[in-house]
Image (cartoon, rainbow, N blue to C red; front, side):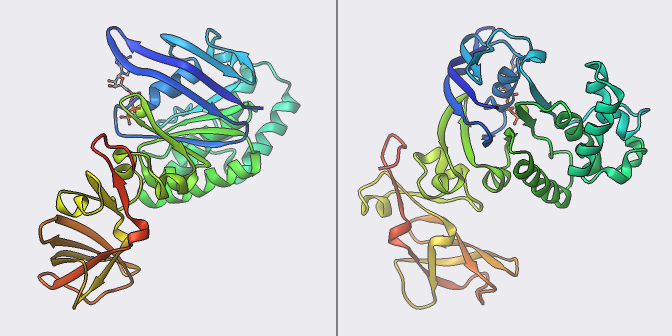
Length: 332
Ligand SMILES: Nc1ncnc2c1ncn2[C@@H]1O[C@H](COP(=O)(O)OP(=O)(O)OP(=O)(O)O)[C@@H](O)[C@H]1O
Ligand SMILES: [Mg+2]
């Protein structure tokens, strides 16, 4: 089981309030991603759940048990960090076995658990190597293996992939998602990478300055962001946020339109503009258009559109996909 409930949780360091007041329910077996800009309190929140920091107020429950003042070792959670401190002189097998050995488990039990974890993580052929003889991704898998053997009620990941290059990050992202399908254990995953959040999460928690801006499935956040912050944070390239006359026309302070929801035409359309930089990715083209009376608008067109720098162009937002926000920044 791995049901985690936070009630009125706050955290201050000295006089500085980092997390003002958070309520959050994480269901057993869920893959929950905490996402938000640097310094918004993601790691702090994870460390509060792990017991590595004390709450300033509020309660944390795991499977109905109040663990607020319980030591980290008693919470049955396993944490995987960005920098995976493996023991360099020990083999992969010994590194994975380490927590079990510390817990005094039998040799047979340890061997079985290490073999099981190695199979799940595709490390079976590397068990006798030392960390120095592994790639970054393999080392991170060893660190995850060390967490798996403890059979925790939840895994807590703090930006586990940010030391890896882009290609390896993509691969490891899939591996961790696959691992979650196999183990079905609750996972809380911290990242500031909204692509990781969108692709891995059952549920995303968007944090901003220690507050929860919105909680929802990736598609809920994409389709119905509750406010300007979430609208601007989720989605890549970013949603275009436009104020002034075009927004007035829709009875809003700000309108939002995602780059993929703008139609382009050479001859006619709602907004007139001139193409600035055109990024041709093959599968897509990103056009940065200087729109008259609006400013810079990003357009995502499928395939390789034959438009280049300096071309005159018309843009038409898909009315059904338009987002409207009031003066308070909340969605109308
Ligand atoms: N021990 C501490 N004492 C004082 N302030 C701290 C302490 N730990 C964290 N903070 C502050 O709390 C805020 C949140 O930090 P936290 O590490 O949770 O951010 P984060 O969202 O994980 O950021 P990043 O994406 O950069 O890892 C920051 O402003 C940080 O400076
Ligand atoms: Mg952090």
